[in-house]
Length: 372
Image (cartoon, helix red, strand yellow):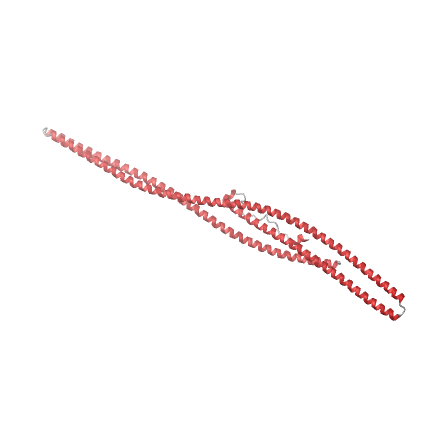
């Protein structure tokens, strides 16, 4: 194998590597687009979940405010009713007392006048006065009893209203408790999912590190084996070329010996000419045989080397795809953890950041670099 064939082979190999690099870059762009679509879908889903949580919180706050307003309204109505009843009872008692006093004074005055006019009728008037006082006392008692009954009826109405408001408050409390329980269950599920995601990321990071180390070892071993095979092939080619040169030299020496023998042993010009023609034909056959042997050997060697190179490249490509897949899964899980961490813990989260952090990604490295 001469320098021209080696240069041609290296040029073909470089062209092949460039083609493979372009294909891999297109695949990388397609993968990044798909990853971006997945991230957008996840962001929309998380926004929907956050809006649902906000709605539940707003419903909870509205129920709490309604409950507090009902309690305040109930207390205010009870206080107003008590105050109004006390005022009304006091005014009625005062009016009845004034009426009784005025009636008593009126009868006493009449009694005094009657006693002055007629002392004989004083006993009768006194009895009438006592009877009148008894009637007034009974009227006052009846009025007080009616006021007490009215007060009991009004208090029973307000008691029923208070019971209804209390039942409504208890229902609202039960709804709030159910909403809080549902919210706590949602938070607990998110925390469990977050912990599971943390564990999954840790396992995937460990697997990724192990895969990268094994892949680097495989690349190094492949490069060492490839260089060794190239050196072995070069050494083998040199030995075979030297062997072919020795065979050609031996054939040439054999032809020269035959020529010398023919020139010394043949005396006739015709026989010499015929022998020379036959030897020339034999020499041509040997030359063509040697040439075909060299060409077939070179072609088989190049084909074998190209086949080995294709196997090595397929192994490298397969390993690179595995690493890219692991990196993609790791990035996706890490971004999901960051979002869930921000939803649960807010700005106090472990992975909080203002924007999605994608700076940890390593740049794309073509396979051709490892193949060289």
